[in-house]
Length: 224
Image (tube, rainbow, N blue to C red; front, side):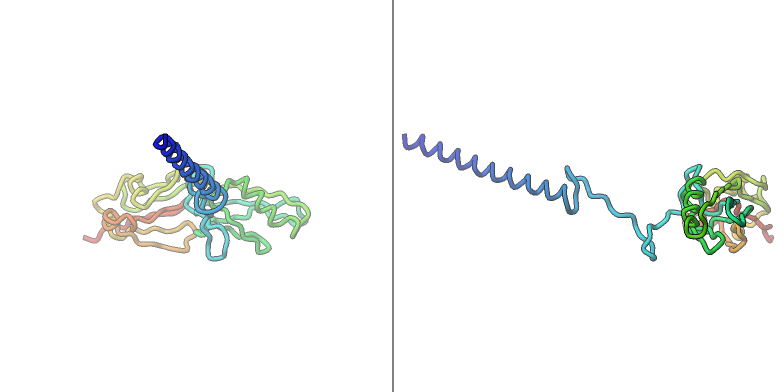
């Protein structure tokens, strides 16, 4: 009889211990779901977008959606339905992704659709400068140019992400008379010219610079 009673007490003690363990587990799960480093079921909590030096959200200027504006795009912008309309404003998206408009307005264009950019420009002007404003943004056709000693020099459609070596390949590659070590890359706004050593770039991908819409590549003649 005493032996049976001892067994009953031991089973009861184990049950109490298990109940305590399960209870404490529920508290931990609730704390994780509501507040700190993880979400429900162990899923990591979302991480905030990285910030730039000015405290704003960092813009990825290398987004290559087919209908998104990108670095190098040439835009024709019209601001109408105002006392003195601005028509035929030509802006090229700079390497930081921005464009600058009349009255000192600067907006980020890269990574946006033309319609979204139109609405953002309108918000910058209305009601700060005007009561009413109509904005039209028209992107130019995206192309790039390859000239000099390549097999098929010419103007090509810029269809997406591309590098200097890729652009040269589109143009049929460098001929036996071309200088592979001094290929010239001129940015669309003519503000910068880079010299690329294609032989080194083939071995070191970081030297194979990206190209943007309306950039020009020129392969000079090799000196024998």
